[in-house]
Image (cartoon, rainbow, N blue to C red):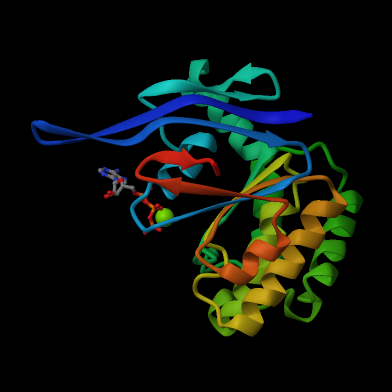
Length: 227
Ligand SMILES: Nc1ncnc2c1ncn2[C@@H]1O[C@H](COP(=O)(O)OP(=O)(O)OP(=O)(O)O)[C@@H](O)[C@H]1O
Ligand SMILES: [Mg+2]
């Protein structure tokens, strides 16, 4: 079943009086529960595609249909709400809030997603996710006392704690060594598969591709289909 459908997506950036077309008509379909990896040379438009699909910036052409709603036709507030409640994000850097503990980072995410969970449900979900990412013992730690891999594990917990429908990940393992990358990919896959969360992941990491159900290659603003 298709959850996100991208039709003829275009993005043009203006540089002074010149224009550059970065996305030249992208068609892509994400099925519920699948992990799709987006690969391609630096500058081919992967992050641009991911951020537009996630409603973080606007397209200049084409449409994005999420769960039969046309994202491109919604106003900023409606897109913000979908992003907060139904999407999750992981980037190359963990982007944790420096003055919040690990537990508080997760609470903030639940507040933002405005879930109608009881205090007890929240406590239980936070407990469960901390256990899954093996960070229970760091519940009260601040980000600056965590290693890169630990920070990224918290970022993954934060990205899925509100049980989003789609997780957008832009090079989630790029700042980690190969051992930590594997660990992060293993967690990301198990957490998303167990809740049938659909994943769109940009990566340059060959070993991350093993976890993907599909790999899509981008070249010069277009998707290259084999054959
Ligand atoms: N806000 C912007 N304004 C102008 N040009 C932009 C903007 N964002 C991206 N670009 C340009 O669009 C092109 C594609 O960028 P994008 O970040 O999508 O590439 P990428 O495939 O993610 O590359 P990388 O693998 O290096 O992350 C680049 O030439 C970039 O300079
Ligand atoms: Mg990029």
